[in-house]
Image 1 (cartoon, one colour):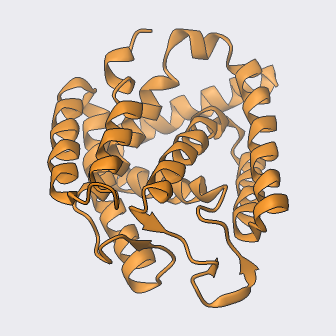
Image 2 (image 1 turned 120 degrees about the horizontal axis):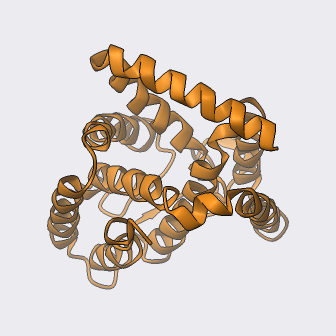
Length: 241
């Protein structure tokens, strides 16, 4: 595992950090410190491009969290605030997943992995729909499938992002660091939601798009080169599949 030193932090740091902010321990300030230190360390380990994307991710996450949590009330944090660690946590997840899918063993077996994770994703969200009446989560799943039809080259990244967010949400809601209301936005009664919604990772498409928008704006030359490489990879992926 070439990048184990980067993405291996994801599972333990996330678990410990959320436990510290849980209703059991209730020390959010410790989570803030832990996540900030992890962000700084991770920032020193990644490439220049990912450094920029992590910083842009802070901006996108801060705006998105403020809008969806504090303004729209789509979900609510334990102290009814916007915890400092949350935007840094989003950037950390983004970088960890990026490096995980760069592992040679993942790339070597990506076709098989994509098929397996596709089935696992559908089973997971369908189970939440059937047993948890999670209509909102299933709608999010349908949006993900639609995006995959339009952008098949993103599958590997967003499948791993899907299950990374599943891990995050299950732990965060179990520890009551945040909760999702029983219906969408706590207002749309005909769209019931689980706590957490099964496919809420769909919003990471927006997070990714926001990060890339900033990168494009401040690095136009590099962006054009990146687009060419992405087109080549997309064509190669389409030919293989």
